[in-house]
Length: 143
Length: 435
Image: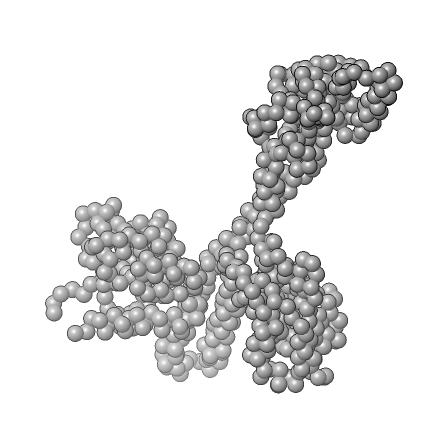
């Protein structure tokens, strides 16, 4: 297969978290390009070729890692857009958040998020979660 | 006095005199009454205006007796007063003039109303008006009596209470969302702190073989210092950062848990406290046996409360009681209940290590732990319990003697939900009744 592997879209406004997530994905041997956006508005623009991405032909991401608390549009608002649109609703979405509020988790699943990850302070667990995600991705990609 | 001329028909002179005396007596009675009172006859003319009425309105009896335009004297413009509605019998129209009004509960066809009234001296008063018909022996309305009670103080107090209740609710909501936002947002930097100290550890691991090689190339005295930095000081610093972050994380989770308590809706159901306590004790069997403690459970009532909350309240209190039993005597825990007209009271006595008097209030505060710090815990349990008790409209307190034991007591209202109804809600309801 010569086809370029699909990128991963990471929407996260905390630069530290972006770096940690990226490092752990790489450590887990995920080689896909990681597109990093730091607010919800940009994510919507990217996915639906609006705003500054109006004329861009962006490849549909393999996976979207979406933080809950984002500027401009919240993670939930972005999730809603993604799952309501025929073009994007099949892309798996992983919600990232700092809390494990049951109501919040419920809302996410109601809106159709595929996985909900609480960013753990425990580094080992965090790495494991991200790495499992990476392993899952490599399994998917391997024929 | 001649104004009181309700009585018609033929009478003998003596009858007239005696009737006259009776009338004067009634008049004096009304005159002496401390409640502002006036009477109008069937043609709306004022026939009686007592001294208390003069004092309240600033209008002298001499200036108003005989007038059929009471509204104008009262308010400065032509309008009916409550007694006029009683005379005309059109009590259904009262609402056009008085926003807050009701039929009298005591007197048939009597009316009640209340409103702000500006007296001639400019003073604003909130008046409770009460008007009732006076009928002759054949049942015709020949006059109406009206009393005016100045309830401004009560009204102002009510309004103040309403405002305070609203303010309180607002600041409670603020605190709740504040705690939630704070704990939510505080965790984000912690993820970085922990994550990057982990990255540093990984970097050190990777560095280790390089470091060994570099060490061999160093001078002896340099090497000592380098080894200390690399093997001791840096890992030590990372460990402190790590354990502090973990602790901070536990504290933030504690705040988050408490703030969520306020959002979680309570479910009222019948809870058999006896079986609830028994099942908690079953889960504590191991600890109780280890401490060789005995538990005496008295007669416990059925309450109407949130089951999960009650489980957590008693679970925490019993867990504490067992945890802090004294080591030098056989542990003894007793649970009993007491019922007052409004509350179910529960008391948990133990003969444990007790709490110093100065600490007895503070132990219910979040993160506060009293006495010897030899047991694991974050200082959340009792803060959690207090919030749960208070949300159900109850109270919790502790009486203790250091070295002898403690009694934790809490109350749960017998009429559930008393607390959930705000004071503001109650006032509005009363007002509604009067309408």
